Length: 114
Image (cartoon, rainbow, N blue to C red; front, side, top):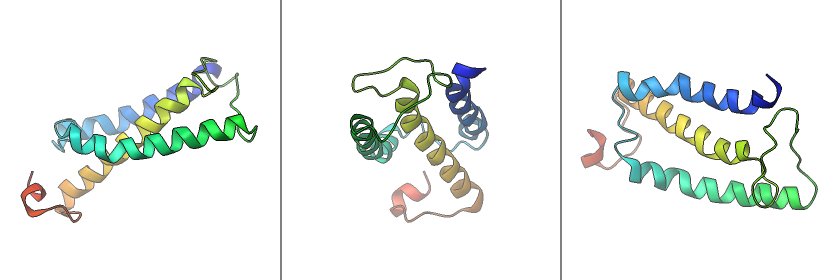
């Protein structure tokens, strides 16, 4: 599996959490603006952090466990996907817990029932 290891782990995260959207109707994808607000700041901060760490020589990625496709700054494409996939899966899991338990997670009243 070697070079597909990182991608396989990301795919596994998606495979496990994607059914939550359909089975529990958590509506994460339907509320894409809210998802964007949740993911975009994290994505920006961590991509900049990793680019800095790579530039300083503090961080490196195995060519044996990644595809070897590097984006500007030397960041592997899998790492960029990580910063999108893991937060998405986290939001799906949070919304599933919210749906099953009835927890409103502090949402404004008009959104709590959505």
